[in-house]
Structures are given as C-alpha cells and as structure tokens.
Image (cartoon, rainbow, N blue to C red; front, side, top):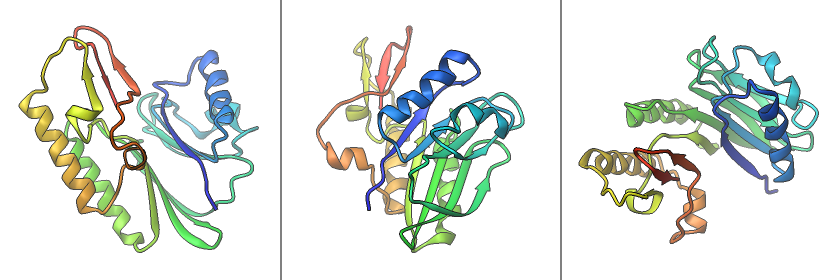
Length: 206
C-alpha cells in the first residue's frame, strides 16, 4: 500500500490565516502523513484546528513558541502507531509504527542553522536501534545535498567553500546511513525550489 507524505516548514502557525490555510493545503494534496516544522506551539492543544482532517497528532515542542516539529496522520491513514519519542528541544520526533503489519519508522527533524550535520548524524544514530525497519525521514535539514542542483543564487554569487563542504558532508551522511532523497530519485535532473531567502542573499533552495 502506498501512502502520501508531505513536509512543510510553516514558520509559525499562530495566526488564524495560517491555521486555516495549512490544513486546507494538506487536505488538497490528499496527504496521509504530514510532517511539520516550526509550528511555534508550546502545547499539543494548539493543533485542535487540524484535528477534523488529521485526528492523530504527535509533536515535540521546546516549551516556548519557537522551533517544534509535528507529525499529523489523516483520518484515513492506515498507519498504526506503537510508540513516540519526542525531543525536549522540539528538534525531532520519532514514531514507531506499522503499515499493514510491516514495521515503519517515521521521523521528522528540524536541524539548527549551524552544526547541521552533527545534529542529523545524532538523530540518524538514534534511528539505528529500529533497524531493519523501513525508515521514512522528513523535515528541514537546513542543508542542501548539492549546491549546484539544490540552490539558485539570483545574484550569480558562487557557493562558498563552507557551503560546498556542508553539502558534501550532508551527502556523505545520507549515503552512510543508506538513505535516499526520494524526490531526487524520481527527478534526477530537475531543479525545483521550496524556500526563498530575500535580499541581500536573494536565493532559492530545495
């Protein structure tokens, strides 16, 4: 059985407009699983606005209205959740689940703006205890796998040495843990961007 999973960095869901738009967007895409980053909620009750479409909500919060991650399961999602591991800092969330009787680990992570690879390695190491279960890892890694394919500078500024090293370390980490970018597997030569950084950086990234 196939399930559809989408990932969104919502950069805060404390406005009524965003609380209305976010579940509508997820519903329009017919998502079974939604992984959210940066809802900026300090308690689980804040997700009440989404419960009609996504009645099962699991979250990790920092205790403040910053960061945070959540995994939302739709009313028709066939996944059975056995356990949940939530980071006290609101940076990662791990669900041990079953899909049609087969083990499946769902992970949502939100990497910091520095020390990304160290953080990602730490979370992926935690997932190793669940192997050989299938892994589905989503989130905001705050790092591209390729500066050439996953970033576009509108000022034609070439990537710095530090940016290239970060991308290389991230690729090595993903390969070492035998993970794949499913979007890139399906679209190996495509350039599509999901985040815009305004001037003075003025760039797009994936």
